[in-house]
Length: 269
Image (cartoon, rainbow, N blue to C red; front, side, top):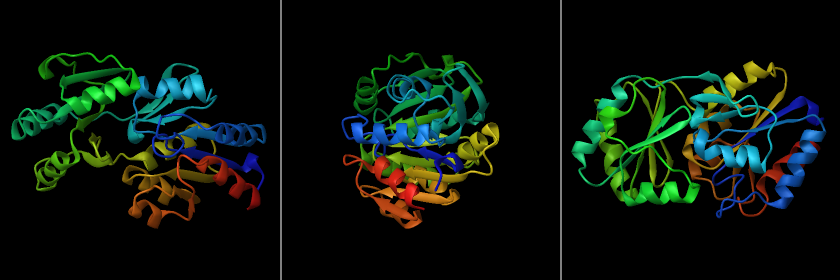
């Protein structure tokens, strides 16, 4: 297939990025070959602006917008502006308060607010996350975080604690939002009806790429909707079983050149 007929969107963590958060040379070479052939290559990540910027700008040097916040925003790093966004409702603050009261001194909370990261409650899991991404958050009480501009919030904790949080949320009373487990240590609250497939659709509309063959790749359950929506959905060998079942193509793991394998597959279509 001619690359100029294709738009390819990939998840970052667990997919394009290796376990130590690098992009392999073989993947980078394949991406450059794909782009030079006219393909549109971009990313769809649960990361917000602050945590995605280093990868998108300094490593990938993307010249097209990216889907951030697990689908709640489409951001153009070249123009440094949002092209589309969907904010979570005012109930999010109360959700954080209620969940924190249910599990006192257990959870970390990260509010992703456009280009800022607010952390009203900190635990070791959240601190490790911030350190890994070299992000300095705005630490302030929950009630002091400005209203408006909340694109999502993340609960960070040990997987066994998050299992209990997820059970409590699913029991009811938190339905005016979209909830997704984005990694073993992270449980996310998004605007209702928003996921990566929504962000992918908005990006395609913005780029006028509706006629292109769409490819989406990922590894975790928050990637499932995007993979199902694409013309070709791909999962890595290290993906969750539910993601593999949703995919049309399963490639090698994220440490072995998964993106280059997908691009080679596209070439042969």
